[in-house]
Image (cartoon, rainbow, N blue to C red):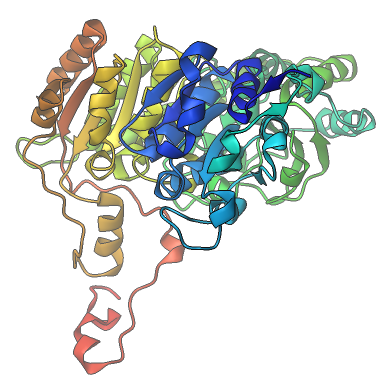
Length: 581
């Protein structure tokens, strides 16, 4: 075996894995490895905050299928990744976190920038690995990629900073020698049971999730839906998991999703859930509709056995790759079940529900607003139309306006929607947009960001300018943390503590950072700004002046209660003083 340093061995593992870039902020702990990147053909994408690198690589992986790789200085550099890694973990996104640590001889001495990141990341990764000796550097890194792809999530590799150095004997392996490509249909006998359930369905509905997007089987789902006459709902914040121009598309379920999808799902006697864990939050009652039927039989397909029947009891569980399993299931279905007759009646039912839903949200958008401000839904009408017509990639944050976008984002193809998902952190959309633009340099990428989240994102505008990433940030300036403000309206008698946000001009700040800035307050001006930003192909920030009193329903009405106060000094805050309490 050839002699090399541990840094060289790890660089070669990255090369064999097809890693073209690594994101992060440089630090002394890994400078020996960093020095090899140019010669290895690996670009280093330098960001302003490590959390950005994590969100970028999350989005990059969702677009390309390749595990993203991040790195940072031991201690504070790596701890800055916690939120992004937790987001990727709940989003089932493969990622490798290269985590230098204190020198092996000084562990436990509370030295400069020492932190036990190995244990810190255990709960938010699929595995937290540690290089026990320089000779194991390449082996542990290979293991990280193997686990990240097999279990679909981030893996941390803790490397004592002195273990980058030395001389080792190492054989460089190809990925096929230490990990297998995902796939397979699981237990073939279970397909007979699934066919039997679907054969007897009167009102089947398909729920299409992230696995359909990642495995590329949306055409099979479409064909199966047509064969069964089954309307299709997409899972929470995976609006691109079925084409919006198909007559069986009903829209997304979950918070601020489509009432059409929920009303149709409510009547289902059989649910075929493909590539989804049917998350708890993503299937909670919404709009006072308890739409996920408790009596329906469920056939669930998911590649991770931990997710089968995790939140809802299933009739048949198929632990398998979404593409392989759906193709196998469709082959069996065609042989056992005749194609749906009079499918036009199903199309008409879907259209009627969608028309009712579209009319409802259009009426809400016509509510009166403060002079000089737009209703946030009026802005989202324009942005949603732009995204659909330009086939843009849309990234979304969490919060009042970003979450309301779930009602307006419609896609004709997959890998167009990148959301923060159920970790629900602010400061995701713009950073993810940079990663999506890295993955798809010729596509239009648009980020939907509230002004609260923008405060956690705007410092990355210079990164977009430096690396020529023409992401369009639409920033909704409503002057408040409006999702939380809604809770203070509903439960705390309009006592606004910590809700207000102030800025003179986000557009001017963007211009000072080298990007194009626009400030708009009408649908016409917003449409023109979007068109100009798309044509100019430069980083752009469109500041949309929206009315902060037009608030979406609370995320979790069941999680809050009118306040009870006992101490005399707080008695005036008691629920008895709340109107209609």
